[in-house]
Image (tube, rainbow, N blue to C red; front, top):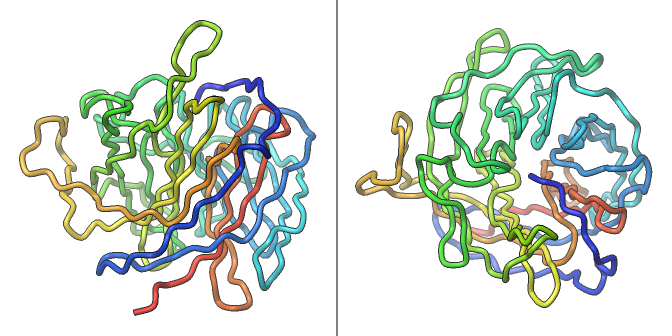
Length: 342
């Protein structure tokens, strides 16, 4: 994602959350409630975060995208409400050879980390102490052909360390166009599996997810380029196998604004497109179904999402961390995740 320098500083004037009522479709299982939001520390500078992973208790690891650095976040929350109480940062390391990191997971089998690098177009393992790079995941050919600034944005791993999901921000070049104000974009959600930590990741399925259209108007920079976009910012795999998708749009409605939406997915009738070089003319293609869980509109561009600890009432914590080039837009938000009543 290219860096955007905002000219506005009054984000509180645009902030607002919309919580939609839960539907009860057979393939959907979850609902969320807002918990709290706070600003991240002002320093060190350029904390434009693209990925976050829960480590233990109040400890998380997050990564800045440009000039990547992995940070340890101490994020204590109220055990009843899930509201964040503070956010403290400690630098860990700079990942060797990383360019523009947008996704981070901690490998539960050996404690290493995997980083999804948008500009480099790769997913690579790193030593979590030294930051030294190791093996790179072998990607299927379609994933090597993505639009500029719309490469890897997400990474999530199962609690047993044997399943990994990723996707690009928008469609691959052979799969169709990027999102516009009249149509969304088709993104391949790609699942990798392995038998043990010693085995290589192999693709075990690809499914098409259709994003929302760009709802706002054009957002022009000084070069008169339209920066408005709509795509996937992050994925989060729940312990029951449900995949959550965080969509992110930036556009202009009177003044620039950002819209972030959290969706639950249902793959039960979706077509596995693994092996297709292009989906643009695939017959009888059924896409992943989705249901909106939560939406926030303002100037906090949430890009990182992970599952956190359980709260005192049994709810699971969801933690979101924002991108942002100025301190006004650096935020952490928490949500409470509950199963739907049946």
